[in-house]
Length: 254
Image (cartoon, rainbow, N blue to C red; front, side, top):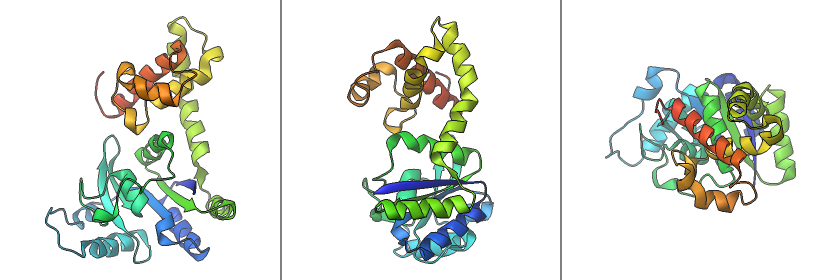
């Protein structure tokens, strides 16, 4: 399974790509979409009772599917992501990623969402989906089976003007780099020499399993995932700054 991601400036562009992916033979369960909620109607149309009756998924699919211009049968829900706000989540993996499986403001898929729903989504990429949403952008990720499907998905997204996740990730770091360099040099270190390890530590702190953890609390995970760098000063400095960065997005002082 290969995940191909496109970041769009408008939901309309993303909806067109969804339709094109369907025409290209992608099944509904291979396409996922996350989009910032843009109207009160989209929120209030979703039942929020914990005692919802069977079939509510079809209701939400109809209401939000119409708003997104998407075909019936596409599982949709609404969730609130901390630091991002209300998000429309479409597709089982998209809903699981947003935490829309029965929590927050309701869900469409219920027990269909489980821990395997986000298989194929690298843990260190999830923050960048959230960052795109925070900036009002819409994300589609297609779960391609094989190189040919992945190549076709990339072509479809590129032709619609989508930015790749790698490009979005690069632009995000470029926007932070000067401030991080100044901070690191103030500690008496050589940022140019340590840049890659520092950034690795910074991004490690943004991974979902580690959010909010101190460096000491995260040590067992870091030792397993970053065996060659986790104990270094550049990595630890980057991790601590990444934690501060994430908490600042939530309005928490650490």
